[in-house]
Length: 246
Image (cartoon, rainbow, N blue to C red; front, side, top):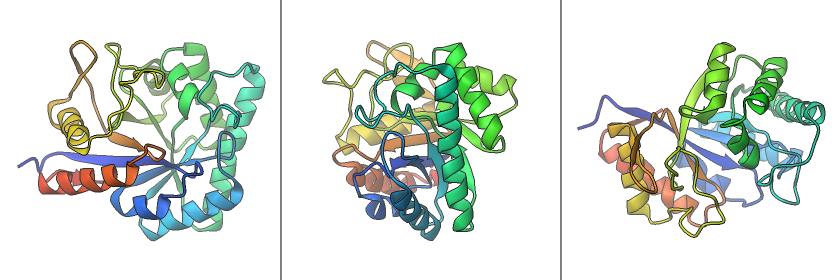
C-alpha cells in the first residue's frame, strides 16, 4: 500500500544495556557510543562486529565527555576542549571500523549535545567543524528544521533528518524533556502509529497540535525499557505496510 516510502531505522547502542544482539536484526543503522558518555573500546569492537554481521550501517554517537550524567546534561566545558573531545570520539569509531573492514556511515550527536545544537548556532558550528576535521564524507543524523541542519547544509555536509519513535514532541519539534512523565512512548501500537504518521503524512502530533516533519531515519533508544519489543514490532509493521527499511 505504501511501497513508495522507505525509512532507515536507527538505534543508539554500546551504552551498557547489552541488548545489541537482539536489536540488530530489526534495524538498518546504529549509533555507537564513543566511550565518552558510555561504552569502551571493547564494547565498540563487539558492536561493530554485530553490525557488520547484520549489514547495519555504523555511526559514531559522540557526546559531552560526561559519564556521570550519561551525556544528558549540558557540561561546563570550553569550546576548544569540547571540539577536541568530539573529534577524538569520531576518530576512535573511525579507527575501530577500519580494523573490521567496514566504513563509518554517519555521526549522530548524543543527549544534551544533540538538543543543544538543534538550537545553538555556535555549538552547531563547533560540531560541524569536528566532523569536517575527522570524516567529512559521513552523514549527520540531525533534527528536521533545526539550526544544525541549516548550518550543515551551508557547510556542504550530507544530512539525514532524524525523528524519534519512542519520544513525544513539543510544538517547536524539540523532544519533551525526560523529566516529564509524558516524555517516552512505550506502547508498541502507539509507537508505530507515531512512526507511520511521520513517514507517510510527514507530520507529527505535538503536545498541543500537529506539525510538519520530515523523517529520513527514525530512532528507537537502545535504553528504552522495551526497546527490543519496539524495534521488532516497528520492523514487522513497516514490512506489513510495504514500507521499505533501508
